[in-house]
Length: 383
Image (cartoon, rainbow, N blue to C red; front, top):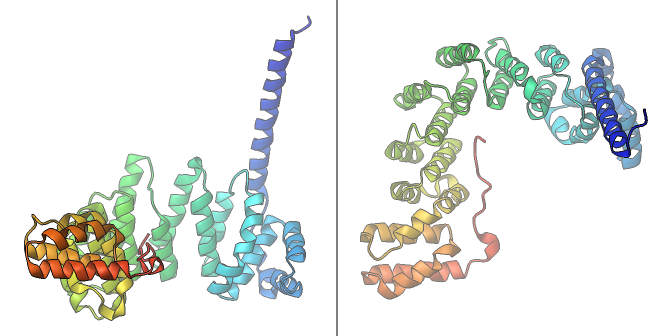
């Protein structure tokens, strides 16, 4: 029987689709089964990095060499770079990414990566590099395996502290199985309340609890903030940001007090950042009152810029005089161009001469400020 042209075309399309599907499955299976575990003797000998150095930064020679390497050899190269230092891997290691993406275009061999990541004899920076790969390139059906990998490292007390912290900060989702998820929630709480848990890990767990919707996050935050003087700065930073972002903590007076009394510039910066997330007149007043400690005006500018709408609402003749003055100060500190119309109105209709004068000074300074000097969104912390 002779097929019609239409039937022939449909048959051809179906055959092509089946062929492509089989090809994808085969290539994925190949990616999963191809041995990729680095040879530690080769890594120790610096075989690949020595070869790369011999090319004296010639892009063509480097590309030819890396293109010729197998996945295993590319990972050996990354491991060699990690042994030379975290900076080397973070900078030079980026050239490997392109070639790994080509190798793993059809899927990341997550089971083999899991084995390499969990091998404590591997360089921790190399393991972190692979964690990053796993977290960013996993497919939907690999999420559960990735979660297991990250949790197993995070809760392991014998693991490197910084790697545990990194694993928790990469964990943004837990199991879809309710029973397994509850078990994972309990694991997070157990490590958080364990007195032997390092502050860096404890802080990271708070962020993980927020990102994964932990039902007892508020209790954990309260346990930190009710004993703020007893907790390390890194724990306070995570607790305040996790609390503000989840809307389970917004004690402006306490955050302001920590901003004023801490001797840690990083704690100060995070407290101001958190105030900027609250978006209220009281938060703006707090930012203005703590502005500029440790010569850090950038974070104050960022926090004020994040509250432009609130500040504009404060520049209103119907607001209390104190609120108007704070709004003028905030607009002037951050040099907010959006405030010029409101300031002009205050110059004309301000309720007191003092307010009219302050508005004129602020307007003049904002207009005289080069656009390049305006604040930028470059001071986010934690995400």
